[in-house]
Length: 409
Image (tube, rainbow, N blue to C red; front, side, top):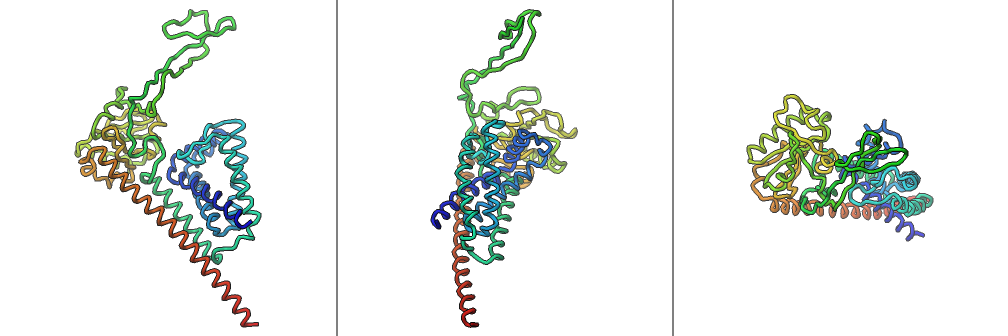
């Protein structure tokens, strides 16, 4: 039974750690998923809390997974994990039966599961955490209560710090198609769209093309647009200037083009607008071309903003750069670098633009991989070192207490 409990801790702990970790890396993406849930469950009044509710969910999953895996305050966190898993199982059963949303989003953009797949995943996790919860008193602590709470607090602080870094700066790793280092090409896009108009007469409906519309004796019902051909991965990459011209081909064909994406202009502070203007002036002085795209076009842009603003789909802007008002550098069709308004002041644009896109991508990828690998390895080694030190110290502490009792007797 001890071996079975260890396996269950491993399966449940690693799953919750991964689920929480990918949510911590994408605060905006997690908030969008929660907004879909709120809308599907008729809880739209909670949409304004989606960002911080997502942070709470991600931190809870990550910390619960870590504590269950390492047996830190196992009596407390096995209960939290058990009740969370019960709730998730019932929720995903509802999603599987009624399908109000197509993707549960439990692993963010990293792994996409259908609602039924998510439900079966929870059916595997629920017995694991149930065994741990109902046998929690048989799992020995790794340290005394105060030390274990210190560890739990450390996990909470680390999770919140990662969330803040991902929210205020560019995440360490992205799972979207427009992640840093991606090569964006629309050459494979063979998609076309065919629009038909449905009209009704004498209880009979027929489809008509734009060139062959019926006479006035027919009643209009609806318009149907169907995609023909094959859509490429980046078929949605359409950026319009303020005159409605598609500038996406120019952006992809140029060496150094920066696109500032504004998906919600009303939520940008005056300080953010000042940072964007200052960043734009530095970029132009360094020789880069720059475009602005907003999900609302010129609406919501401050009257004194000195640059022309075009239009792009809100979903595209959110996928391209999670930061509202963030900037993305395109170089030879590569996404070479990203900035958020909070990191624009520190951008060394002259040094960055001196390299070609491929060199910049490779250098950033090497640096990012090395840092991420060292961070993950350091955390894993530190956790296991702490775990075994605490185990040994707790054993010696227990033995000393036993010896003292014998001496007193």
